[in-house]
Structure formats: C-alpha cells, structure tokens
Amino acid sequence: MPKWIKFLIALLLLPVCAGTGLALWKVICASGGADTTWVPLLAGAGCWLAVFLLMPKPMWIYVLGHELTHALWAWLFGGRVKKLRVTSEGGHVVVTKSNFLVALAPYFFPLYAVLVVAVFLAGRLVWDWRSYLVWFHVCLGTAYAFHLTLTWHILQTRQTDITEFRCWLRGWVSGRRWAGGSIALAGSVGG
Image 1: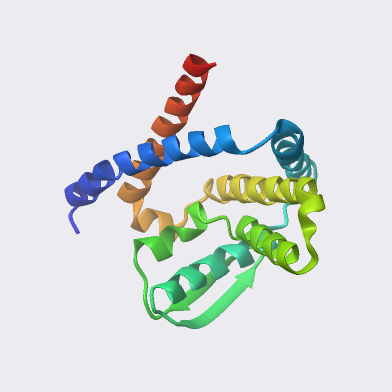
Image 2 (image 1 turned 30 degrees about the vertical axis):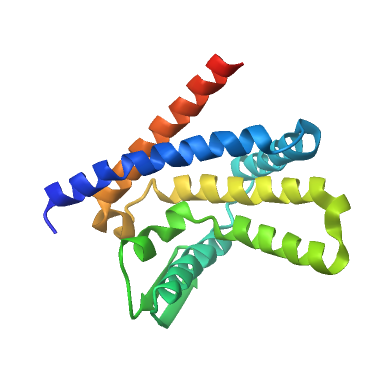
C-alpha cells in the first residue's frame, strides 16, 4: 500500500481519536469519587512507577503479555497461533492471519489491565467483591502503568511490528495527543 494512502487513512482516523477523547472525558466525569477511584488508581500507578524506576524491569513478563496480545488478536480475526517464543530479550509469535490491528495490538491493548478487570468482574459475580473496589483500582492503576511504562521502554528500540505500520501509528498518536489536549482544555474551561 502506498505511503500516501496510509497517511490518508491515518488522517481519517483522527475524528475517531477525538470521539474517544470526548468519551474518556465523560467517563472521567461520571466515574465516582476520588477516594474510591482516582486516588487508588494513581496510587497503584505511582507504586508501579517507583518499581519501574528503581528495580530491574520484568521484561519476560512484559514480552509474554506482548506476544500473547498478538496471539489473542490474531485469534479474534480468525487466525491460529503456530509458534510462540518468549525471552526477556524479546519474543516472536507466528500466526496464520495478521493485519495492522494484530501487529499493533500490544501497543494499544493493555492485556494485563484487561485481565485485572476480568478477574475482578468474575470475583464480583462469584464472591461479591464490591467491598474490594479500592483494591481493584490500585491493581488496575498498577497494570495500566506497567503497560504504559514498559511499552514506552521497548519503543526506545526498533520494533518490527511498528516499522511495518508507521503511518497508522503516527495518526493514532497524533489523535491521542489532540484528544488529550482537548480533554485538558475542556477541563480548564468547565472547571
């Protein structure tokens, strides 16, 4: 596919990013009190950030989640996993069906955060974990910060799945920056 077509598609995705930003703003406004949601979420993220900065990075766990995310998205698109290799230096997955979503999924789909949500929802259904909502937000903040920091860390090196779809990613990142700026502006105007 020519680069100009990829760029055009990335440009056309910017309104989707703006809509996502608006939806995020509405979720933030309706999400509940700071004592049960935002303070625990940020505390979990802060704890992970301290671990990230002061301890050795758990790259094997990150690479496992990265490769499993490729595999999960290939499976969602009807593909099969032929081979999966994970080491702390990197990994590789061979799938029968791939596209730009399968290739870029580890960068926008925080697998461990989704697993935290799934475990909490199951626990809430089976054991009525409503009283553990604060701990859910701590774990969610930790898992999401894990995703963001280690994704940033590995993006400091050349990633083959990124170089293949560079134009798509540029549009997505630009859109997220625009949406983030819009949320900040809306918050300062509305407050």
